[in-house]
Image (tube, rainbow, N blue to C red; front, side, top):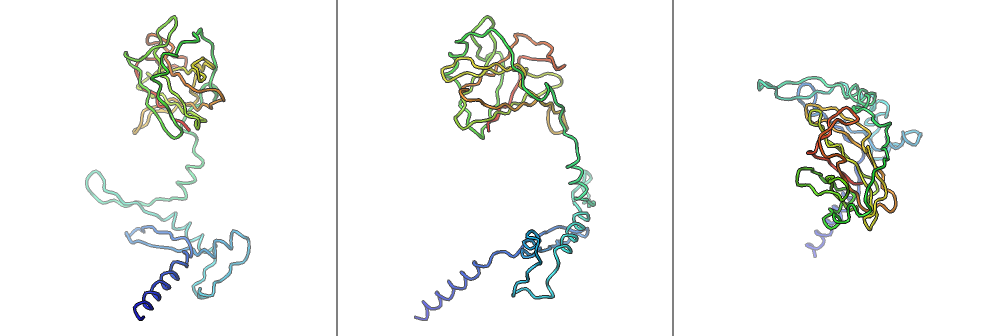
Length: 271
């Protein structure tokens, strides 16, 4: 009986510990000397502040330990301005420098977008003579794209072609029912990129809508990435398949000042 009583007592103690939620937020940072410092912001102070009411002291919170929320917020802001980052430089030396997080956040909020708007910020519809059966032979090899997935579309000399007066290189995708938006990116290598057009098809492969310029933003090249063009396209009811194709047979100047080429990659993401 004593054995079972002891087990029961341990279970009750464990339940009591689990029944006490965390009392607040814990902020941890490293000071200039490399010491790890922790500041706890009580949950009672936070909830009282959001309700616009006076803070309520819990019975298990000693009065001398209570700190007004304004004092804690000010201390946290001061610590944000007094942070340090430590790293090893190219000579192998350990370097520590100050980092003003408040200034960093303000700079990020006020920074201008790192892209340039093109095409008035919207995609353009266009007209071209296209056969009704231009892409039906491609439907069997269409790759299905579901929401949250992405695919890298590559054009080369072995790419399939559309039926028509000109053998235009094309790739066909079948969109899952849960896809509502598409994000298309064309990578710029020096001043070259694949200037693709888009053709929406219905469930039977009949053309519905031709989009001439699917890009509305241009991102410059940085030290860690290529430059690229980006466009976001909504999916309308009845649009089942998407044909991504090159509307030219040889390299040529594009309308945006870049060079349209026959070989390159596009990244298509679905949401």
